[in-house]
Structures are given as C-alpha cells and as structure tokens.
Image (cartoon, rainbow, N blue to C red; front, side, top):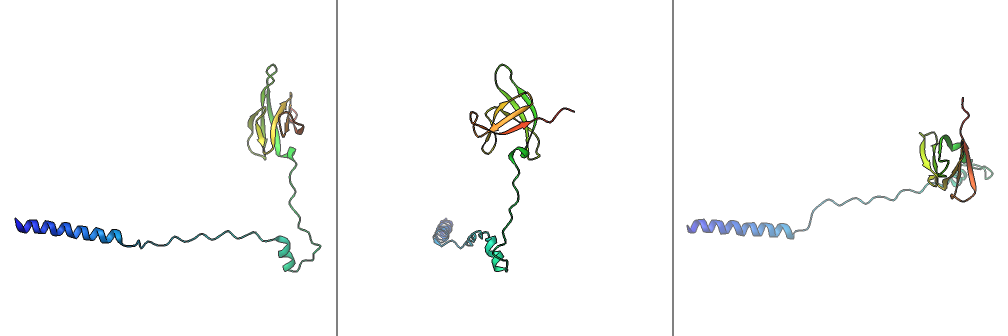
Length: 139
C-alpha cells in the first residue's frame, strides 16, 4: 500500500513540475511578418521627364462619358392620381433596375419625376433637372 501511495504522489509531483515549467516558459512561436506599406503610384509627369520627354508633352486623360449616355430608360410606371411611380433604368449596359421617385439612381442623382415616356434625374427631388431620359421610340 505504501508503494502505491508513493508512486501516486510521485506522478502528481511530476505533473505539477511539468505544467509549471510549461506555463512559465516563454512562447516560442513564429513571429508574424509585418505587412509592407503599399507603394505609392508613380507621378506620370515626373516619370516622363525622367525618360526624356519634353516638358510640353501633356498626359491625355480618358474621356468621361456624359451622364445621359450612361443611363437607358427602358420602362415607366407612373401613378396618374398618386403622383408616384417607378422607372426601369439600365446603367452602364447592366440589366435594368426599378427606381421609385426619390430613390438614388447613381452618386448624386435621384429620380425626380416621371412623364409618359420620360424620367428626370437631379441632385435632389425638388432641385433642377440635370439629366432627362427618354424611352426609345416604339418600333
């Protein structure tokens, strides 16, 4: 009986020593690499001068499409008595989506009003119209 008790206490003591050393040691994990900062975009004018371009050379920017050419009015659902309604507007060649009056169609443009075959877009519902969309003729 004494030998069994001695073995049990020796195992308990060894366990305490093992876990004490394990928990008190420093973690030896692999250090996490630091992410490098994204490089800044090069200045096109400075790069052109470096490669020998004359100072009079100008960088030509891509033309921006007119706002009305980005949108295509494909359908109008106007409420005659309620003054509400919705328009089916396709943007940048994507499938048409329905927009209610007052809904934001694009950045800085909301649907202001609807006519029989037209829709008006502007910065605010009550503001001036900046883009007027017409449905294509039937045919």
